[in-house]
Image (cartoon, rainbow, N blue to C red):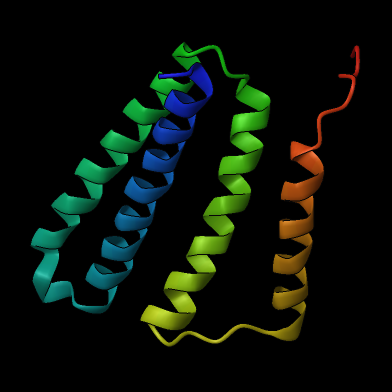
Length: 116
């Protein structure tokens, strides 16, 4: 398997495991009598960090992976909040989300790196 595919798989697992953790943390915050689901969040966060380690061990840069992960995290947090827990989002927050999507596109454009 090409290295980029392996990185893509591990990065996707980061996003999936963290999204599951987010969902169950929010769920438990609303249903405190069901705190056993908090264990699922802890396990998912551990899995997230292990996947993150694997992506870095495959030679990916901390900077770009962290930026992409942060933006993706915002996007699925909004999705989980709005669509699964009926939270509301303001116009300004929606504009910020759209700017985040633009940022993902700009970050992935291959260009000569800065020498900082």
